[in-house]
Amino acid sequence: MAIPQGFETEADGATSWETAERTGAARRFAIRLPPIPREHGAWVILYAPMAFGFAVSHAFAPLRWSLLIGTATCAYLAREAAALTIRRRPRPDTRFWLWIWSLLTLAGALPLLAPNPAPLATIGALAISLFLIHTGGMMMGRLDRSVWGEMLGVAALALTAPAAFAVSTGGLSAAAWLCWIACVLFYGSSIFTVKMLVAAIRWKRHRDVSIHRKIVRDSLVYHSSLVVALSAVMLVLGRRAALWLAVAYLPAIVRAAAAAWRLTPAPPPFKRIGILEMVYSVWFSGCMVAVANLLR
Image (cartoon, rainbow, N blue to C red):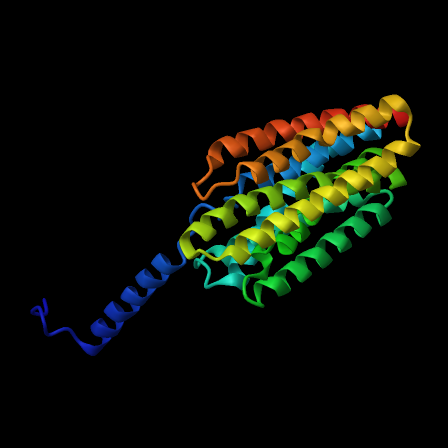
């Protein structure tokens, strides 16, 4: 017998309530596209040092290279999901993607660890340590967005250079760590330059001269120190290697000096800056490979 509308039994009501709960839960936990890092420059810093490490290794291992590229990508996506979970209330499916990317990273890392696990295990431990320090900055009031917080991020991403070297050769050497240091110094330059441009916009908004002066001073100190360090290294290199080293870093130094000289409170063309950063990265990697070949 049909039950008139509005006179459902308790069981029917419970069933309707449970159905609504299941429907709401399904909506809440619907799996969407994974969260993707929006910082385009970070993708460059992830892959360019890796290509640099492959080239410097003077080895050819396409299968292991492909596996490292996939593993590093999954690790970076897992890091993004973890950061979203820590920094703010994540999307309902963020933890799902965190597990997926973490499992894929582990699955890709296991065959790469054979037959000598020590080199990649060392790099992995260092990457995790840098992430934990960076995470501590997130929990202390967005310190991860400071200049030195972002330098930590660059240092972690650039570990793909020694990882590529280790995957190609089966071990780590001083050359692998020098590749890492060279990449951190180069990409650190872009952090100071972009921060300086953003600080000029904030100065226009708040009229706080201290903001303007501090970031210009920090950029000047960083790039002056970089020039001094490069000059010292060039003194012990051969003439051709020293020339290539100077040419590798020249665009970054000129870019920073030009930005400080022409600094205005107008918003800079960030899209054009991003494209130029990719060009600078390719230039840097090519020049540094030339340096490595000359020192071989």
